[in-house]
Image 1 (cartoon, rainbow, N blue to C red):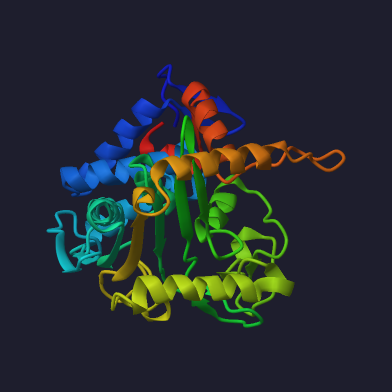
Image 2: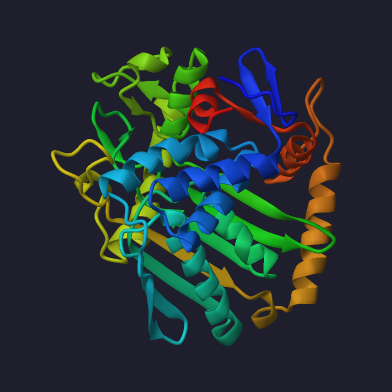
Length: 352
C-alpha cells in the first residue's frame, strides 16, 4: 500500500520516492534485519548508487533479498572485516561473511590507499556476499582521482555458450576514470545478457523479456520471465562465447586468484538445506595516474577523447553517441528531481 507522504508518487503501478526518505527506509529495514551501522551505511550507499543511476536490478529492490539472508544467518550482520597486506601493492581482505557492500567499499578504500604509495593497489576480498552494482566501487576510485576496476564472481546463473546448464555467475566488470570538470567515465556491465535480478524485475512488472537473454531448463531461449531458469551470456545465441569468456576472467580474478568459492560451487542464498554463507570473492584495482604519465596528462587525454567521441555524428535517425556513464549521470539528475521508481513488490516491502 502506498503512503500519502508527499515524497511518494504513483504512475501506472510504479511508485516514485524521493532519494532521502527512500534511503532512510532502506537503512531501517537493514537495521531491523540485524545489520550493524557500518554495514547499513555501506549497503545503503551502494543500493542508492544503483537506483539513482538507473541500475534498478541492483538497487533498493535487493533489500528484501538481504533482509532474508541477514535473518537466516547466511549473511553476518556484524562482521569483523580484516585487511592483510601481502606486498607493496597488494592486500587481501576477509569480509567475515558480511554484506558485500561493506566488504567492497573497505577493499576499494584500501586499494586507493595502497595506490597512493605504490602507484597501483590491488585488493582481493574473500568470505563476502552479493555486492550489488560493481560500478559503485569503481566510481569510488574515480572520485579519488584514480582509475578503478571492480569485479566479482557469483553463483551459477548463466549458461555457457551453446550449453543447457548454468555455470558462471553474472560476473560483472566495472571500470571508472576521472574526468576533469565533469562526472567520471563509468563502465558497469554484467557478462551475462542481463543480470538475473532484471528477470525478477520483469516478473514483478509483468513484462515480457527481450529476445535471446534468458533460457528455460532445457537451455532454450524464452521471453516469459516466469519460464526463465538461467541467463544467456552476453552476445546471445551467436556470439555468447565472448560473454562467457569475460565471465571466466571475472572468476579468475575474483575467486581463483583469491581462493574464494568458484561460481559452480556456491549455493544460492535461501536455497540450501541449511543456512550457509555464499563465500563470494571480489577483486579491486586502483591506478594512480600521477605515477604514470601524470594526472594533468591523464586529464588532457580524457578531455580530448571524450570531446572527440561526443562529436562523432550519429547515423541517420539515430541518437548521438555517448560515453560510458553519460546515460547514468543523466538518469541520476532526473531521479534526484522526480524521485526513484520502485516496482510494486519493492514498494510493498518498504511500506510505500
